[in-house]
Amino acid sequence: MPDIYVDADACPVKPEVCKVARRYGIGVILVANSRMRVTEPDIARLVIVDGEFNAADDWIAAQAAAGDIVITADIPLAARCVKRGARVLAPTGYEWSDANVGAALATRDLLAELRDAGAMLGGPPPFQPRDRSRFLQNLDQIIQNLKRSV
Image (tube, rainbow, N blue to C red; front, side, top):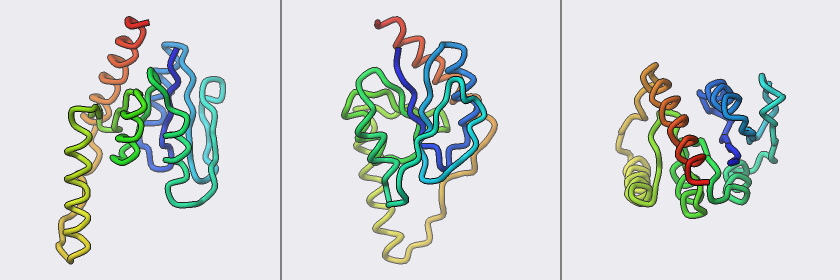
């Protein structure tokens, strides 16, 4: 069975991850820079990493393996985990893969350069209920696909 690694500091779908994981009997590892309440300690455990920039990302990228699932909105972390063979899902329900993560990284880098040059670009759209619904549907589908391939 896969593990589910969650980039937990700002993740809006932690309860949903635990709900789906419970249904399939999958362990959840919440990785964060600070202590947080774990509402489902029987299936989820909290790993607290030091406060260094990207420490949680580095820990997840080192642990995630082929067949695991990673939940993150961080595109560089998604790219690292996809490269290791993990399935990667954003909290909005968008799945990162070899086919799309490279272009997303390039776009992210371009937007960072534009922001650094003073362009006012705004941020991502607000998290919506349809994002939560899409996330639940896609996480469930990924787990079913992983179970079938075993």
